[in-house]
Length: 379
Image (cartoon, rainbow, N blue to C red; front, side, top):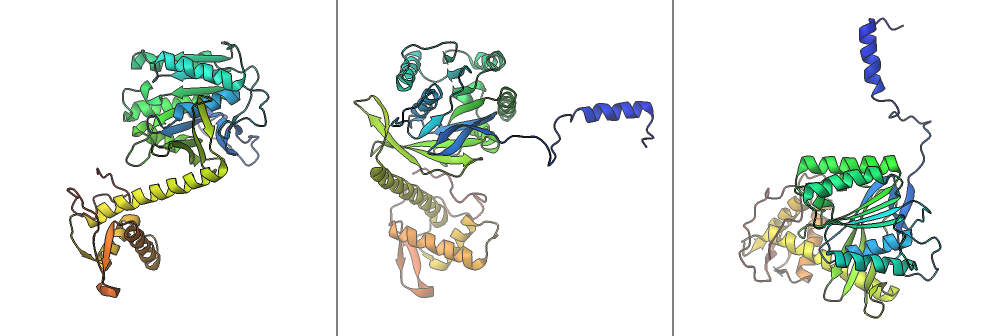
């Protein structure tokens, strides 16, 4: 029996009312997220959630989102359709909205016409496929327009927003970034829509740009990364974070000058390209680890070099000693094969010295990057 006085009881009931509808039990009737966009068979974006497409400038983010839009407009998708293994659900009469804050309006129109062509649509239905270019709007107007649009087009099933950091004063504005991401999550849930946001990556570490990117990594339902090998002229779609699916095999694509669009690379060439991309990424990581651990030293004992590597890859010593030493020794062998270091002598007397010429290397400092094995190095 509740013996609280009436006023206290009223306050308690008012407080408990704040949580109405938010409590979850093992008998709650909650459906699993509904997949909306898949890439190579894995769910990337779901209805009721936000997702991200990231990459360096000109890596191919806009092309990838073009296929997301095109397949969302197609009720019946041809079996031989080359959509870079991207498939969006068709939602009948629910609108699709594309907002571009980065490209010139002429490029936005070109993207629109290409999407219609890929979808086999002769004339745009502006009630169901809305395309807007906000490049010339001031930042505050872009922000206010987006908030208003989310409330105006509540029935939209898909939002693709090219340039999410253009809606805040700075990508590192913590408060504005948190508020915007939270609002987008709220509207995605309320409107049962898939909201896909494009964002640049930091060139040093591949993380999403700024504080807004860090918040996105924590909160998003999925994120894919678009990369480009400029030497070979191929692009990659890689899984970054997939909350509701297993990582997919990277998709390799290139620009076809005859079709005037991106096309998939055949499977054998794709496998070669994927392996080369992985080797290049691994080599880059080893190079930066080498810079960090070798520093300005001209020669080190292998034992000392190994200890420095161990500190970088496991700064809190969470792994067993034998596992730490094995991982560090593997890195040393990879650096040797990659012509980053020279190993002299053998056994406990073995020494390490630089193989390459280094311009102004940083002096070794064990705690300079305590939480990362890949520091930012300018070469």
